[in-house]
Image (cartoon, rainbow, N blue to C red; front, side):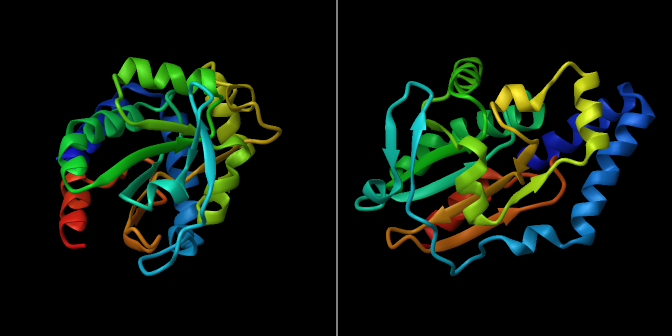
Length: 213
């Protein structure tokens, strides 16, 4: 399963990375957990906001229109720079035909600039919509946006990643990695969010949720 692959990958990354960096990652995860942050967002039974976002090619995608004839799987990811996100997106791509058989559309959302989203689509060979949520405005409505602490922003800059520039934003904010299965009325029927950025919904669980609607 995806989660097993992610944890095996994390183990390898942590072995190769300086302990000062891994301590910063773990510190930030613990700070979010101390806030019980994942539980502050939308949950099963809540209705999602109706929104419009543009894909990497500038085409507007209207969630309200999708829900007229399809269920919806929404995956919020941090960015194509995140290897855990790329593993997740590729896993979702593998399950895309199964989702579509159940009349469900899959979309992925991140704060990346459109050009960076296009790179994410191309390198992962994605066949579903990847949308840009500028300044995390939609993720904020889902209640899953958090601001990076300065110590972690500096850690990422040490890797050569300036998230303000990458996302064209004034401050460093990211969504928790989160996945939602939404029925045609807009109600959330399955929700996954975790303060640990290495934890993601297993596609098998998403598929099972769709089957149960």
